Amino acid sequence: MKAKGTARKYIYAISFFFITLSGFGQMPIFKRYYIADIPGLGWLAQFYVTHIIHYVAAIVLIALVIYILFDFILNRSGRITGSGYFKIVILAGLIASGVLMVVKNLPNTHFGHTTIIALDLFHLSFCMLLLGASFYTLVKKKKWVK
Amino acid sequence: MTSKISRRAFLKGSITAAGSVAATTGIARAAKSITKEKKEPLVTLLDISKCIGCEECVYACQEVNADKYADPQKPFPKMYPSRVPVEDWSDKRDVTDRLTPYNWLYIQHATGTIDGEEIELTIPRRCMHCDNPPCVKLCPWGSAKQEENGLSRIDSDICLGGSKCKKACPWDVPQRQTGVGLYLDLLPSLAGNGVMYKCDRCYNRLEEGEVPACIEVCPEDVQTIGPKSEILEKAHALAKEMNGYIYGEHENGGTNTIYVSPVPFDQLNLSIEKGKGKPHLDKVKDMMADGTNLAKAMIAAPLAGVAAAFGKFYLSGKADK
Image (tube, rainbow over all chains, first blue to last red; front, side, top):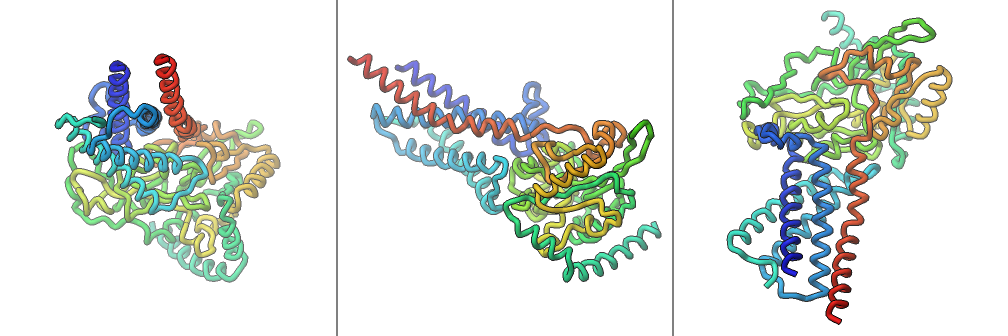
């Protein structure tokens, strides 16, 4: 049981790491600031590669989040903490805005210009908030569930 | 140079005159009717066999879009790190042999062979206005947009000039001008580098019921614009008639610019000058296809999560018994 919990943590951490890295890779910053010059990180400057990695990490993250949600509902093991609720709301916003952006990228799909800009800004804001909240809970050793 | 100016001056006058006449005649009515058909994108058909390379389309494009061009203030802010390139075309506005921020359409020269005889062809080149444009879909800032009529354009008020659209474009069409745009008001030294420019297919003229300037001034009627199904039908009929070839129908998953040529495009691609601001005529796979396929797979992700949770619940219940 504990092994499964550890697996969840690792899958969450790895998918979160890659989704954040590839997400920032959507902006043309890694080449400008020499990060893509570091051996093994050249892919960060290849926009189609970061795009695919972002989608793959999103698939893993969505599957994991839904699994944990239903697992929690079915087994009712513990109570969600305050910081846990905060991160859940941000994560929900991040996933919702991300899914809308995936829909926006499909062929023959037209979103209004303002909607696209708003989605970009919301998605980036949710990401920054989740990064900040995750850093805080990691340092303070606060858990999702008591 | 003198001849250029006089020709441009002449064109300016003739475009204004043509525009005012067109507003009350068939062109305007046709353009209005095609813009009303919202469900179907507008597509341009270019019959390469008709093009004589006179560049009237090039100068007409420059004339009608002059007020959209950048007017950068110099000196440019110093950008960091030093590898960030300054791209300044403001003193080279007369360049017409490639795409630049001040030249959104140019004439490409090619040679080909028909029945053993070598012929020269000229090809108007500009943005292809893809069906699913990577420049629009991958812009991290929402600066590029696609209209319902299929044209894609870059909002120069919002663009930060990161040039991602150029790298994402299979033909490297958008071109950067440093020293203009929103980045100057944000962190000009650390982020952004100007504004990207490309053909916007005269969106403002289309909104007013007029056709793009390059189409209007062409003395040889090289270009035709209309609803996609109609234009594709025409393109195939034309290709059949001249025993020719089509480019743009399937490239990058489909575009709203269709070229018809009497010479195969792979042959033309070998003969044209390619490079910076000079797009190729090669085959292009659908650059957004992998993302589209993964988006379909994304639908299965929540289902997999639910199935795994219920599976675990079922198995743990069985183990308890």
